[in-house]
Image (cartoon, rainbow, N blue to C red; front, side, top):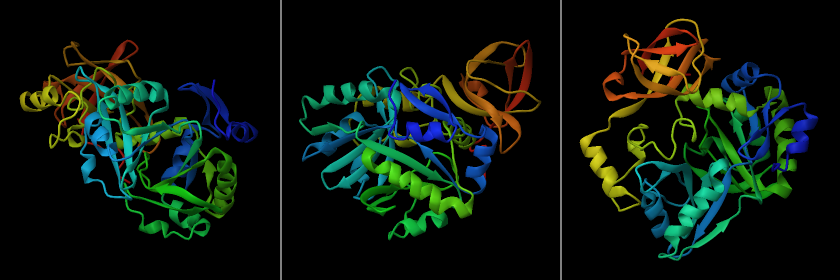
Amino acid sequence: MKSTALTKTHEVLGAKMVPFAGYNMPVSYEGVNVEHETVRKSVGVFDVSHMGEFLIEGPKALELIQKVTSNDASKLTVGKAQYSCFPNENGGIVDDLIVYRIKEETYLLVVNASNIDKDWDHISKYNEAIGATMRNISDDYSLLAIQGPKAVEAMQSLSSVNLSEIKFYNFVVGDFAGIDHVIISATGYTGSGGFEIYCKNSEVQQVWDKVLEAGADFGIKPIGLAARDTLRLEMGYCLYGNDIDDTTSPFEAGLGWITKFTKEFVNSEALAKQKEEGVSKKLIAFELDERGIPRQGYSIVDVDGNAIGKVTSGTMSPSLSKGIGLGYVSKEHSKADGKVYIQIRKGSVPATVIKLPFYKG
């Protein structure tokens, strides 16, 4: 089991620690509902240092990224980030990721912790013919996500950078919490604003301590992965391993917007055909009409009890006080305002298909 540079700090703070993607991670401190509300109403800080970071550099860097990712990275200028995915050869998704253009010929790829080795091998396979410089810096860097509507105001004293000017999916390299040259990025996964800090493992304790100190007057709290999951689900953001995986295509998952056919990429020909012909199943968002909590793996059925799909993510939404979820269903049942039924224990609970996000702030 790997640890982050802050594992002992979380234990001292009384966090409930669980194995997650091969790391010992804090799942909660005070409880998911309290932590969720803290991020929605004020500001919280997550240690997400388990995420993977790859540097792709040199004159061939963009060529490699264009080959292995679905989005068009040629649109990135220095200081911008882009959500994307690695398509596999069979129509599924190796992983979803964020691509940062750090310098003209330097890109940072941020990938999911559980997929670090798989992603590295996948990119390396295609790099054999291209020859970009690749570095896996995952074990050397830490990542904090400072999220919530008060994040900018609470943290401004820690940086000479005007944090309010960093637009969504933009970043700057600047000073923060007494450390020079950290990445301050606005690519949040909660829907409540804020930003992320990438720094070296040797620097993260200082950053963590100063963040909690600066945020004290704003009610800052450390937040665990359980609240991170409820927050992202209220926004309808996909979680790899639940809502997308090696068997789900970007078009089935509603990720056509990050799949650009302005270039050739892995399996682009088959995906272009799929875009043209349509898909037979789709990822839907649904709200329960009655009491109940949908869970991953629960069956989704039609009015006659016929199986039409499965729940991929589900929870009791702390913000909406109702059961919400995502799941794949056959295309004819995917229209907004349509009715589906979630099999919870022995009953089937009616639910309404909705347009995302669940939480509208």
